[in-house]
Amino acid sequence: MRRFFIDEKQAKRAASEGIIEITGKDVRHIVSVLRMAPGDTVIFCATDGKEFTAKITSCDSSSVIAAVEKTDENTTEPRVRVTLIQGVPKGDKMELIIQKCVELGVYRIQPVMTEHTVVRLKPEEAEKKRIRWQKISEEASKQCGRGMIPKIEKIVKFDEAVTGRPEDELKLLAYENEDEITLKKVLTEAGEAFENDISVIIGPEGGISLNEAETALRCGFKAISLGKRILRTETAGIAALSGIRCFFED
Image (cartoon, rainbow, N blue to C red):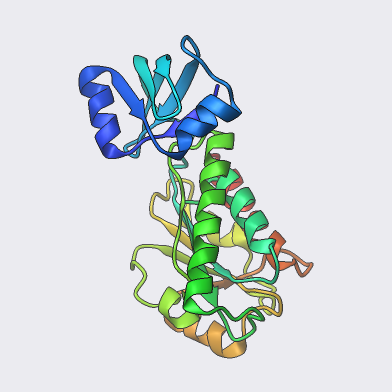
């Protein structure tokens, strides 16, 4: 069933009046692209985890009106929230990273500029990239049945991304020079009942520099290995998310 996201105001009206009104870009997608019509059923996801199954009652080029038939709690969101701190890679690799990590349940993605980052973006270019990446996150969230849209933060420098993170968060640095401490070992020590957040640093092409690794370690990150083979930057985050999801079975 097709899924769309609604804001807090729309969700309140859905809960109190049983009506959902859609305007803006989603109207064109519903009416012109999907060619949905009165009588078709859609799922609308709210930011508080509620899902409204609603039947379209009317639609035109400016709005879609739907009547709520059922309200449920979304069950697709992981119990353990993971933030991916991703070194910005070359080309369109970031788009693949975002799409697949959203499917794997990432909570937030923080793009970072590192010493080995090849791409150098002006502020206006960086913001255009972020807007594009946020759209990819939304599209992936709809496709895979997420209950929320993971936020793609603005691009920041490495030091800014790793300092000041919550003390109770499990902080992980995927580091190619670490060959003893594995992701599995760290997660096992945390335990299956672990309920705090996790953040994972993944470097760009060329990896994390020694200086950056030392900075991360001072900020409470633990260096881990993702296996005996060196993974590409577009593979590493997917591998880390897959391992975390498998361990917590969520």
